[in-house]
View 1 (tube, chains in turn blue, green):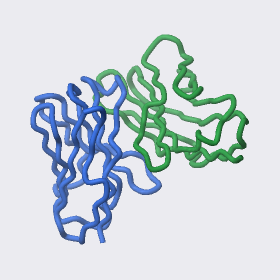
View 2 (cartoon, chains in turn yellow, red):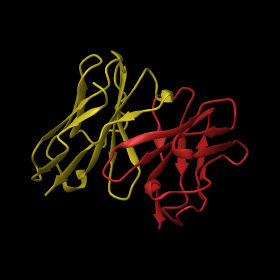
View 3 (cartoon, rainbow over the protein chains, first blue to last red):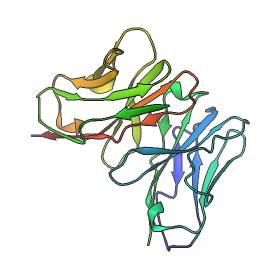
Length: 114
Length: 113
């Protein structure tokens, strides 16, 4: 597609429920990143995929968070047993090969846990 | 390890006045530096980047930034701001051997008519 597409744009969920966020990167971009943006804070790195290599999961805050990507296509970020501190905007970005080309970001998914 | 410090969380400035948004970085390797902009209710977009070469980098919408290695800074400037420049600006750093970008906490630029 023309840009990075994220869905849903907004999600309200009850504490303890699981949620799944989707990211569709720009076609041909081999690198895909997930970041979290909490209110009043900067972007927090979560996970990075590069082609078929093992993902860099070093930013995932707990084992409730997981992400998958099939090849160089769609990625899903799953949060199990959501907590109120998970409320944030979850941003997906893609890049051709490496981050040094600059990211193209999606519009984000605003997650609210009530 | 790498990190970014944006010293000002909010910067109010009158329309047509100049502005400078400050950014300092820390990195143990050769750096690549970025400024991203987030307009209200929109996603982040790349404003400009420094990879190598000239230390003065020009970006979109009349913005420019200067890489200063001795001061470990990458301040963003515009000589005359417009109302449409009201947005949040993020400084970011990456570098050789790093596959991801580290972002600062952002600076909210408010242009006052």
